[in-house]
Length: 233
Image (tube, rainbow, N blue to C red; front, side, top):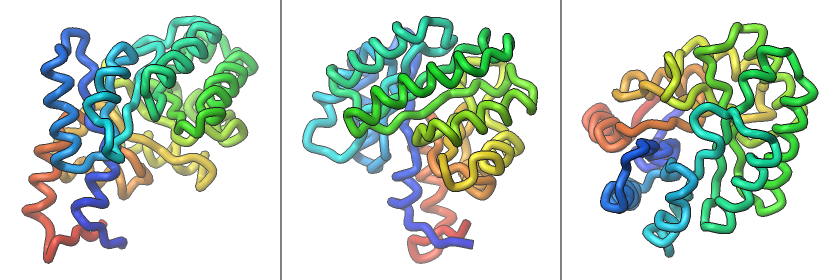
């Protein structure tokens, strides 16, 4: 069991608004909440990168652009271009969605090439890269193979879900992913995490970053659970 301050737990949250109808005012609200609660990152669609970078200028909060979101069904070249463009626009983290078609084709060389090119593009700028599996569509053996590729390529995180599929993060998936990447790659849980108990259990199962649009209410719940400002997980 480890002790965490509320700020340390807030620093595990990617504060999220990926809705297609999110307005500039919605982005301002998202960024202001991120500043108020000291979240690690705002998770936004790529087109919002410049706006959020301006809104968060002078803070240590990262701008996380979602690439090929939520389907992942664009070419490697498109994903690499969008990654570089998002970074040029101010993104300081990248979350991209893998090509599910090529997973189902068992075209693992393609998946490895895609992952390598996007990770390399990020790391050339010292930008963390997260690889979204979208586990709700995958068999366990496919998840394991993706973990094995990630362990070799070494993105910073592998991530359970977009939150736009038929299911989000599960405790079992987080544990499985952590088992197969070990300490080589971190695990981000996202999709359907809306309360403090679920947040805590995701961490217990191996997640070190949590993507959620409910970060504010989760932190408020955690404050009530804390003893002398400390949560034991």
